[in-house]
Every structure is written in structure tokens, then in C-alpha cells.
Amino acid sequence: MTVRAAERRGGTAIGGTRAWARLARVATYAILLVWAFVSLFPILWTITTSFKSQVAVIKGPTYILAGLRSGRSRLALDSAGEPG
Image 1 (cartoon, rainbow, N blue to C red):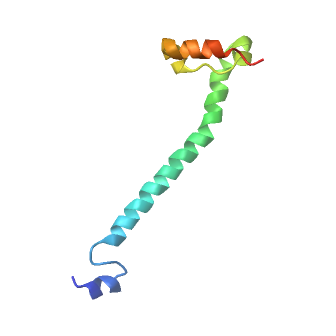
Image 2 (image 1 turned 60 degrees about the vertical axis):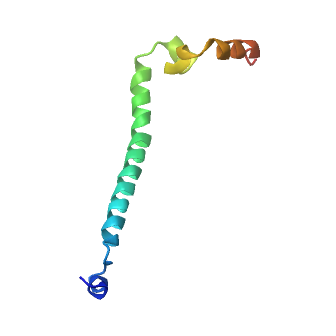
Image 3 (image 1 turned 135 degrees about the horizontal axis):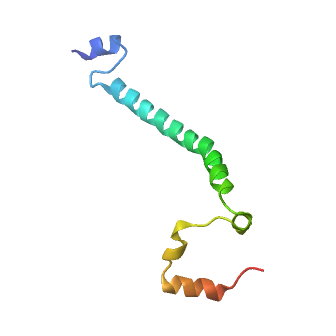
């Protein structure tokens, strides 16, 4: 296929239009995935909070990595003191 024939079809001789279409599809799915997370996170938060006791809700969020702190960072955090 010549360059002119490809230009008449609306593309390029190398297939650049197909690459842009694939990039646009990937970007669209990435945006939709982020939007789904933003939309569904409050529902998940509400469901998980409904199973907690009132004390646990008032205490605040519990983090998974809180128990994995090293000894040195725990000493630094303990010496900093609680804000008050």
C-alpha cells in the first residue's frame, strides 16, 4: 500500500491510526476504572462501618500496615508524643 492510498483511507501507511485507537481505548478503560472506584468506595465504607461497634467507629480507621512498623520507627513515633 502506498502512502497516498493510506492517506485517502484516513490513516497512515504505518498503521498509526490503529495505535491511537488502542491508546484511546486503554485510556477510556483506565478512566472508567478510576470512576468506578470513586463511585463504589463510599458504599463499601458504609457497609464495613455498619458492622463495627460504636466505639470502633468513633476511634477511627484501622490500617492494615499499622502492626508492621519497625522498632525504630515505633520509637520515633512514641517519642513524638500525641497531639493534644
